[in-house]
Image (cartoon, rainbow, N blue to C red; front, side, top):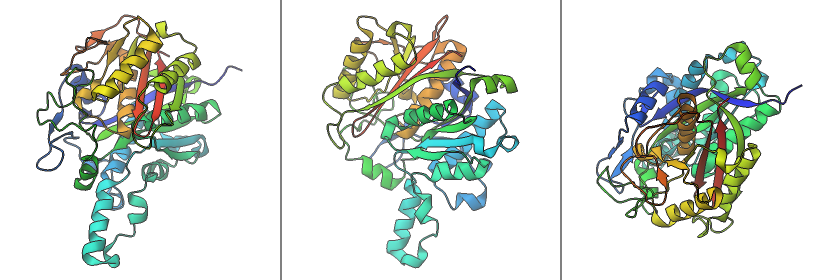
Length: 400
């Protein structure tokens, strides 16, 4: 009996670059900058999900119980299941699971209820306050919505969380689960959430959307926040082919996570643990660094963190200038939604043989992909991410 293998068969994108795979991929290959002004406040720019109609994916009763971040997850799961032509109601619910990532939970929901508490007293607070903001709310609501009665969980590792969630999804599939809904979304653009971020030293204060977020550039000055993310459907490979899945985008070949063990918020000043996560993910995929055709980099956008990432890539890849891309330059950084979106980008790149571009920045240190790049025989992509507090994660996706 052959070993069970985990593949990605469905993509549900809800991001500044579009709602749905088609719009997202077209905007990505066109290099469209979706970072824009967000009005007066402590943060001048952000990547917002425009044209998102929550009523299309969430009924009115559930909308009052949940936050925008969960609406994104519900929409993403709906789109991913449709993309995969996978109907959970036709499956054994105990063979289906959900694992998502969250970095800040239901920001707007929590802000609204705290305001009600202080302005009107405890009786004005919604009965759903205890669950609407909670990190696990999206996983729980997805489990209920689609009757996913296998393992259900959430991983919190800031921007690295969605890779960790994908790793858990792959482990579940290899252990016997038939399908897992996974990924991550974030909605950190409410006034309270932006106020919390405004004190971060890594945040860009720039007001020019074309220059505020320029990872790996000599004048990099920080990151721009964003909302959205992606939900992915992960299935057992033989089962996916056996049922006639429309598209098998990529196989989850190897994953790894490390921790700096340095500081509660700041990354380690060296790159060793970040490089170790990359090396271990590649090794667990049964590959060598020379087999990697593209790196979807973290792209922190601040000079010290970018320099550490360059050093980590040089340690792993040596003198080879592997193609590197940061398509998040079109959207901003989406916290737990960012790595999920990078995984979707990487899966699409492998399926279509084209690397999406990095925009509005250049680098002399890297082979930075600044225009869509057709790559004949693109077979393996490395997706990397770092989270506040020292989290480092990496995943290798390969052509199935």
